Image (cartoon, rainbow, N blue to C red; front, side, top):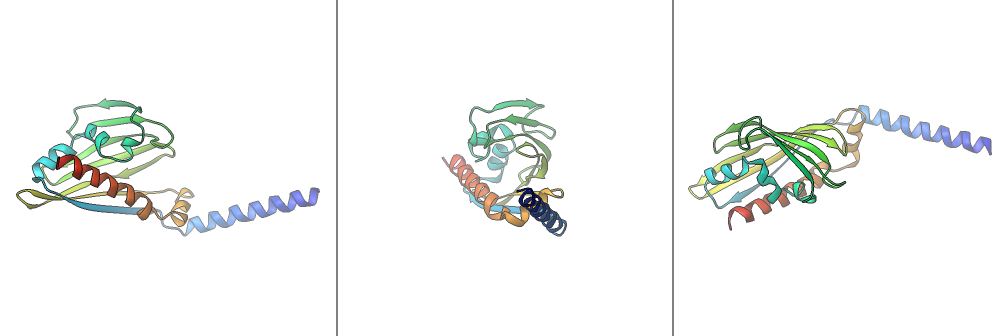
Length: 179
């Protein structure tokens, strides 16, 4: 019986060792982008997106827990504004900060995740005026996972998993703005 336990421990150590070696050679960065055309002028889309409190009405992740605790620091729609949230298991906890605004062109948001794991990502919106009443919105997420957490990128198709949620959020955004 003692030999079986020792063999199990050796196998577990071997599996963990192999996983850690694989993580050493696995990419650490990921970039995901999706886009949609909204039949509204760029100024109207920009003025909606720059207010982080509006995320509660279109962002799939923000909508996962309508009862989450929220707090705000600063003036919404301006550089430096912080939206803090603490939600259920699906929503997690963290904060969003507006780090750059370029009128009718760019809203850069730094997302700092606290739960389910700590990480920092950039989630920019870029807007391109297609016509007087049409705007292409590109929303992305880029981040880097530290070793050994980067091992998740080996198993998880981040682009497919999170890209689907970004696309759902963009469809919600389009629906809200085109009402």
